[in-house]
Image 1 (tube, helix red, strand yellow):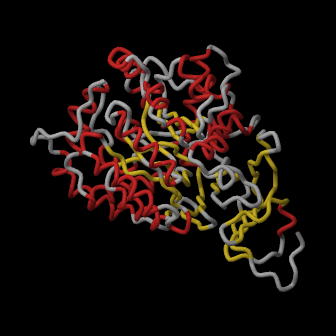
Image 2 (image 1 turned 180 degrees about the horizontal axis):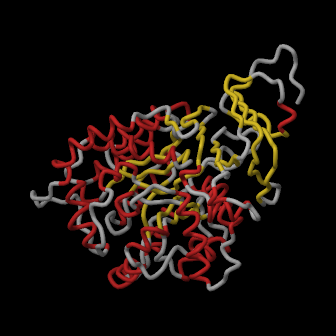
Image 3 (image 1 turned 90 degrees about the horizontal axis):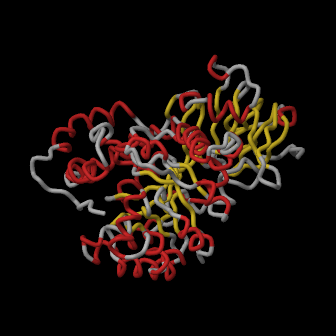
Length: 454
């Protein structure tokens, strides 16, 4: 493109970097000494650096020594749960829920949720995460934080059947009220918690609401093998079969974890009428000592995208999608007994294109290509731990760290530049949160929001 004399300045030009893009077969391609031109929040051009010399822009970034990637997507988390980081350690799943997490969550106020979401968004922005899929309570507060922080998010108000039918209606009302908010950066979903906390009638009603209002569904299912075995023993069907018979698999559904997916589930997932995706968060599975992991290879073979996730920081201790990317690759190699699977390039595919598909944003984010929203991160590869570079994909997946992210851009707006956050005051958030912690973590009342019994 040759700019005319009267052409208005671009919103942002990033130049001198290596850009990760994709060819027509979705293979990763690295363009060296490249430039990205952004106008009105959209990538207008990906070209050689020389082509932008002398052009005007509102913001200009010299990114020599850095790699421009699509912003990472955290496909399943509970952002406010950073307030529980490190509180429930070295416990089996049932004790983790019943003895610590669900009693503490009964104390949460809307302000606690706000503070947790602020801290989580700051952590994710600093780690190059530009979009996250969240599934929690008091989600009006989370939506406000997303809007103010500049991030992109798929949000859902979680509910249990034990809360009564009004909780399901609240989930719908939230989804309709915030759909398309924050200039389109917020998309929404219905969010039943899981088949073990939401009964078949509520799941069926949720599926009907999803169809009626054109909404996706985001829930936990087949989180671990124990849940699958308990469901078979008590109900004669797997959790995935529950989703099938209640119509959830006829909607666009994002399934969190799926380490309990078994072979008989695969045909149901393959032939689901809606867009079905799974989010994998491997660090938590290791912490809970679950014997299986998300069957990424089997799901990929049947065309089900698997996006990368962290889950909440109460189980993961961080919201680091870089770590999830590396762990997914390594654990899949170990599980499959095959060093050629999952390769670094395949891991990048899950981190970009497949994660965008998982959260329903394919064609909008997940690629650095003209016409997509300008959700970008710049990664500095000049540190000693990333040199030399023999295989750039391997360097990004297995050597680079979240702290190597220098700049984070969402919708063409710079949220972090040269490691400086521009939209969130972290010290003030931490100060207020520290004051609230004693009341927040008190468990002497004996309450819990739900019972974990699978």
